[in-house]
Image (cartoon, rainbow over all chains, first blue to last red; front, side):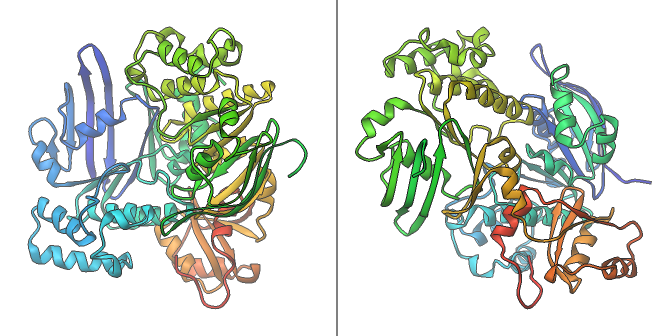
Length: 244
Length: 313
């Protein structure tokens, strides 16, 4: 029996007359790498904000890490991690200061933060960077560090919003290996990306269009269902029906 | 400089303080080519494009564009170059129509005079011509910015990461629009961090840390991959990557979607790997030789073949 960490039933989110999320129903399992794809404006950000306790559903049931998104958003926030491409770390703080700050925000004990800081820097082979300002780090290192900080408190789920934008191909692969390692530890990874080839790294992928989830399956299953050679072809046939 | 070169760059270098943004770069772009610069953030793409659009001065080397020196001929050049910078070049509080008219006027022309050129692109956003640019979706902003960069009918169009952060559908549409511009013989210089877009270009330069790793037609760059490449699959991906790294004959092992791409030392391959993985407890391994893609080639150029002990990623 699969252990469900995100359960969404008939989720609707409206802004005035605009339906941003139109009756979403899906589940995400423990230790799964779940790709959340969709065109710009399809409603992904709205859904992620609800899943992370930042916004309330208009109707429907959303359970994340065992907590109700409507009634227990604060509990959800304690049990998830979040990282996005644009901003995650404070540029004018050092590597260690950023780790301390986030550990503190998540209510971790000082000794635990110290221990985790040491093992984190060791694992990333970052020891020499501990006292450097974030602003002075190359982009690839920043992204890897931001990811490590997002899972510092061992959340049940980590949300990654386009984590690999603009990084070189080697760093991108190192980043995915960190994702694999994290998922293998039992942390669920919920990831959005515009790199369609990255969808193939996921265990399962959902594709949103105009507020609805139009497809959800393993990458191989989607390619079979849409008789496509790649997830990009699947994506284009969903988000641009009738053309091409 | 070859015949019909629109851009000729030789031994170009540019530094900002300690940072060597461009290191001895040389390349030529022929008339009517779609020439792509592919590389990660910080590779030097934007610096290079700013020099070509006469917005920055080179430290060393020569840059000739449309037969003019990029330093001495900047006034004349600016009339003939259309530039779409990475951050949007639009005035967010002006409407779609006002933005377009503004750019036409700055370049001493009118929208009507060159409307043919942008008709296909502008048609997508014309229904919203009274809307402020700031209220357009990402895909529509991109189409408007492209229309504005084209409205003076430039001989050279320079597009700095036009598809970054844009979804796959808008990206595909954007490349179709560029293809249609071919009939106007406009030369297009475009940069992108998306490797898969390389295949849409006539010629591609792979750029990393201020150096050009390779310049060629995209198929030929892929053909440059010199090794035997194998694709290994198993449902236990993370365990598989680790096992492949520990396999003594492995040179490189990189995750590629649902498989791992592997090269072996001296390109030596036999059934040892299969036996090794089976002994390690994998029950669903498949191994097959595969053709390299542009990203495999980029990785190869970033990491020369290994001598001596096993590499750690």
